[in-house]
Length: 311
Length: 266
Image (tube, rainbow over all chains, first blue to last red; front, side, top):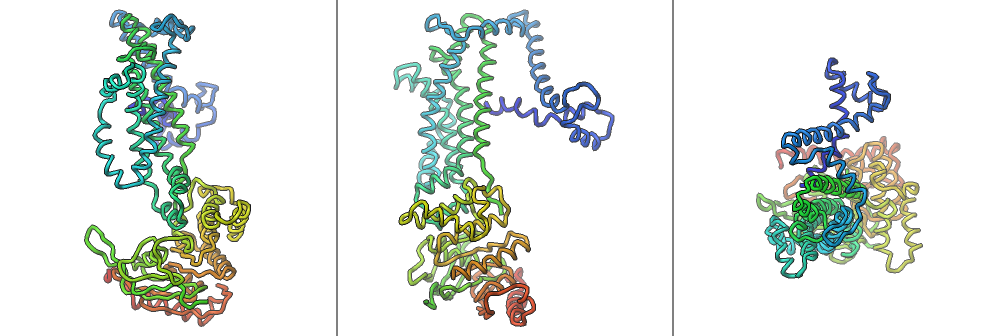
């Protein structure tokens, strides 16, 4: 979902060298091209099309091309629809204005984009934090004890495919307020990936490590802290990443329904104002925030991934 | 010193598999004295590791009984330390912490932190890895990892050291070096050792007793060879020792003449 969409711009720089090198020297044989591309990285560009290191262009040019294509298509679309979709230039000017004062407050329904984003992030943080608090220990217990796994997995499998928004009315009913209901929706949507990934991680702890624990006769607490937790951490962080991605997707939709302050509400409010420029700005803001969340969690996950046991 | 330290009486092990019951071991009788070095040798799949796991208590026998120091072996425990085939170090702990985890478990109740630390350092020094204490297993070579695994087992001051092909994954030179180190350590600590191996030279060089197993399924002990070579043993001198050559030939004869044709038997 979110990961699939927002992964792409981050991945491109790694794959890029091959593509560009092949375009740059179309005449030479395939093998030579490969040789050239691998040697040329880090040196000056051989054809003299820039003084900058070739590697820099290989990293920067493809993403720029992609973004350029997006803006180009947008401009074409804008001009063919006769301006009902605002042009990139108009939107840019509007964005400059919006971001010149992101933190203004003119009453509860008219606040700066900064406040809206922060309000959404706060809801995600609370709902997601509560889900982590419940879901990660639950995942550990479900993964550790086969009985509990068989007991809870059918329930999880049944509830997981349900759209989190279907839980919103229940939230409104129980909590009698829009804000807790939105947080409840985030809680529900982010708890499943964390339970499932943590449980799978616990079940996949190599038997070798568990044998060490058995020979040493470690206490259940030591097993949890010294073996299970570090072994499961990469799985758990994957669950956290999926959960944050989903939560960020869902909060926009939830806020459209609940209102208040938040980026989702902002989108809906601007639609009611027929201010399409702000909607497009909101789409970019949502995308960038999601990308940053994803990126931060990937960095976190790689820091805690250890080499597996090898013979 | 008791002559019967580990006793195995009529042990039989049957595994439930998808194809039905698989008889792995039958009719195993063996006694091991304190301070004895015993090698279990046999072709692949003859149940050497199964027997070792039974002594370790990681599995329980279908029939029969195992005793250690006159007590029934009911489960694994730190008095029977295991050196695993693939070292099984925890990759997120440093070498020091890997050993400390074991030391703390065994001695934590009655010793101070400083004493535990001293024990851990001593174990690292025993295998010549003092300098690698703060490294993670991923940062050291295969031979070094196996040495940390041995140090971890020895640090627990076990009554029995159980080793499952500890040098199987190593190259010949590293293996020889670690065998020499092990000989030295065992001579110093007077440990009782049971080692699974498929290497004839390793078995003759290290052991007091070589337990040769017949081919599976339903493997049992074919023959027990007592290796009466004086210690300390040095591999270079032994290579031409007629007695050593005789023992070596006896094992090879058992493995390849009498228990050959693994494919047919299986």
